[in-house]
Length: 335
Ligand SMILES: [Zn+2]
Image (cartoon, rainbow, N blue to C red; front, side, top):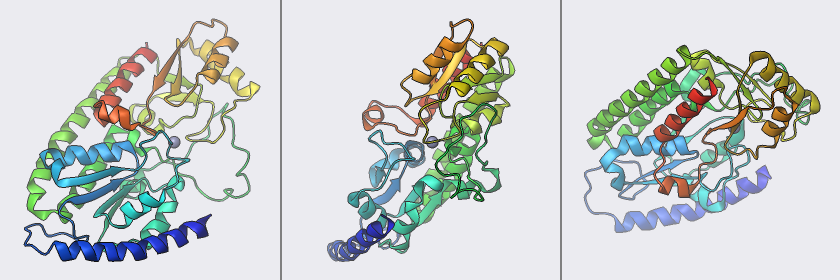
């Protein structure tokens, strides 16, 4: 598979070189923007997941018309199962800035970048950008352990990729993305800086609201009848959790033991809610509820933004609006 992708990339890059030359030829009028050699008028920015895409929109502000921003994962396929199409590879190869997560789910990026057509391309790798503040995947008591990759991954540390679910991380990442955009489009750097500062202050404000909610809550533990991508969020505010599976396990069936363990946790802690993420069909949460003593919990959904749909984006959702909705869900869960 890897070989095939590499071959495809080679062919595409060769084709891309000619395409870029053609564009340059037509584009020899004077431009005030000093930018890498991609040749086009607009800033070309490619992002993998929705949070990156939305952060770029916020940083560009009114200059958004001057950019061509691509969101690769807009069809509901989640980060862990996504593979780039031929068209995606061409877009990455010719862009000015490429933003990706940098975890085990997007290892395909290395091949794509090694053969990129635009040698001046800048990149932002979210995990790398956050340095030592990234966390390893955590296995908690009661979790269903993945069986298939026991041998391969035995010695390898696996990092939790869901860094965007911390508002503090979001602020740090926006600052870095702003710096990169400013390097590409120096003339407008001041505008991007002002936009980014205004946006970070909104992120900080919402962070304060999460903090206040958790501090005043009676309940401090969440039980997830699902995968658990929210570790960066719960750690930020000192919440405890139990879950059926680690971060983004490929498992979808919970064992009897896992169901019973989580149901007991609900009973023991007197919790009134069972959590799940946006992709869930509710079956695991339902089974946990049925196995509990009271069987009266509400199933609540937190959005982890791993498969945001283009129709929702057209409908106006933003990273902040989703995190605000998550705060309302959390308020309900911590009652
Ligand atoms: Zn995930």
